[in-house]
Image (cartoon, rainbow, N blue to C red; front, side, top):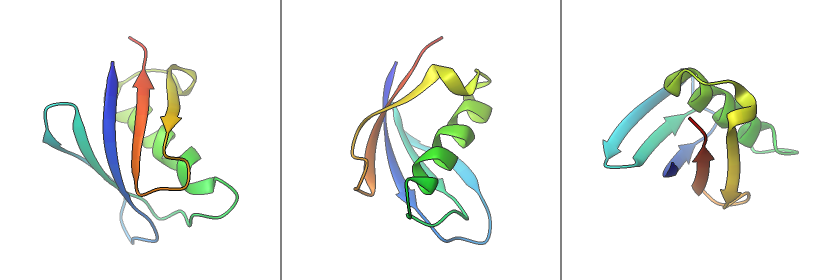
Amino acid sequence: MRITVQVKTGMRTETVEEIGKKSYFVRTCARPQDGEANKRVAELLAEHFDVPKSYVTLVHGAKSQIKHFEIQK
């Protein structure tokens, strides 16, 4: 399943919210340095979908606030 994720970094709390069909808004404490925010977003999505972290792959948007992830089920 491919989803679109809008990311807000540097937040105090971490949340995953569904805002539409296959569209999510993720808040993370991580900063966008050296890919740390992307890694944390993938971890949060894995927790949300209850799959291993290795099942979540960033497909597009590594340096953008709008990202596309592939989630294997």
